[in-house]
Length: 311
Image (cartoon, rainbow, N blue to C red; front, side, top):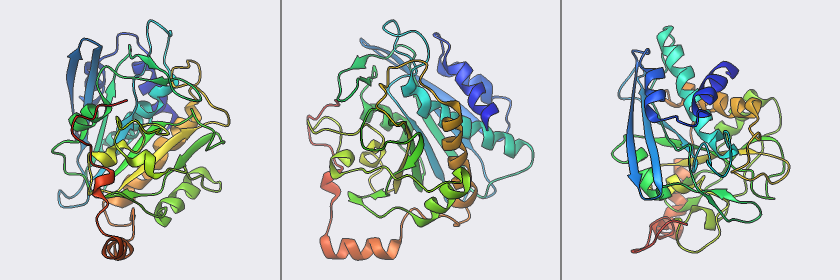
């Protein structure tokens, strides 16, 4: 899938890129619908991009693939495409691959929904151990525009996760499944797909309870990779983290590794192939129901408090 990754990255690295450029790319694929919505405020502009690629059955489970990020550029502070944009590239490359497969007659069992947002002039914000990329709009606001009123049965949240000392390996890692405030065990089905795609022992992102709480509560988060679970509270969410051996700032340029982005995008496509037919489970429902019966409702962990604002 390097072709798709490079094609998307060449679009997103343009300093004047907008959602219209992505929409134009997908217009030639009859099985996909692509729309964008521009959000403006005093901090700047970002374009929400939403893509739906139809599958064989409208009754089949729908996989959501979210490209999570602050921005694809940090201009005028930094020149060029920033590392933080890799999540958007991976998600859109996965969408492009599935659209091309569909056009060639290789239809997936269920619909695939892909969303991300595009800002080539995002702010840089302080964070330890390295600076993060911000966004003209708050994380939760962006996710509401990406996910609200969408029929999705599970989510892969792809995000650059290089600014930490917890996962010290190049490539990508997957997180445990998060559902309704519970951090569940890592899906065996997703581990199987990881092994096939990468040909190596799977890497797992060590998330904590802090990481699944909403932004804006004053608590440290590894990044925003798990924030979709605060919007889709009853939908299983798994993070797909693009990682490095050493901490790399999200605002760093020249720090994207196209081969690693390709692995994450290919992983998402492989999950999509099986999810619609029920061949991939993000969690064990029987185990979750037992947990819930024993320990009760943990939804308060993922529910924003009144007046809470993003970091």
